[in-house]
Amino acid sequence: MASGHFCNFFRRPLSLFQDMRIKSVITMSILAATLQIAPMVFGQDEDQPMGRHRWEQRLANLSPEERQKLQAAREKAMQDPAVQAAHDKMRAAHKEFRDAMHAAMLKADPSIQPVLNKIPQNRHGK
Image (cartoon, rainbow, N blue to C red; front, side, top):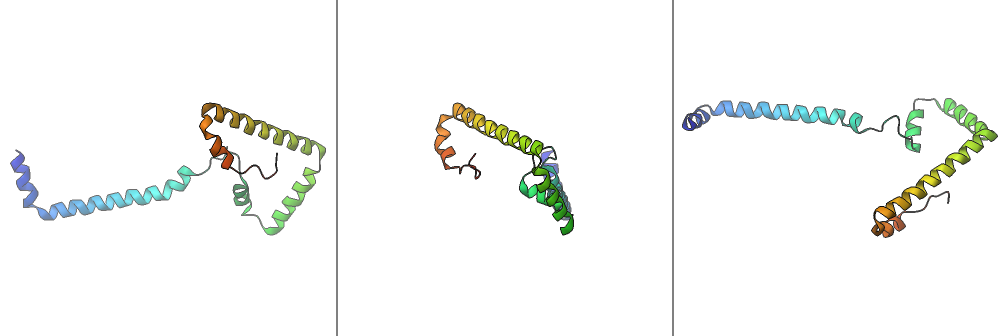
């Protein structure tokens, strides 16, 4: 039985190359499709906090006048005492989280202290 397959293998060499060509086309198609959907799969989830770059991307479709108007409204809103108090609470909560995470990481693996020392401190100094 094995010899029968061996003979068929060499009897139709053109078929072998056609099969290889088809497999190559299929493989390249899968690769191209994967590359097309990779940004969607590995993109940031909408529920995750947005960094400055992400915020700028969301504003990209606004005109310069709309961006300026939005910035002016934001600056005015930041003067509101309730907004300032909420902002202070947010910063304090963020610092509390960072401190707790730092302590928990050191507890989990004390040998990472030199690594943590290499990370620059928050630019706001808080």
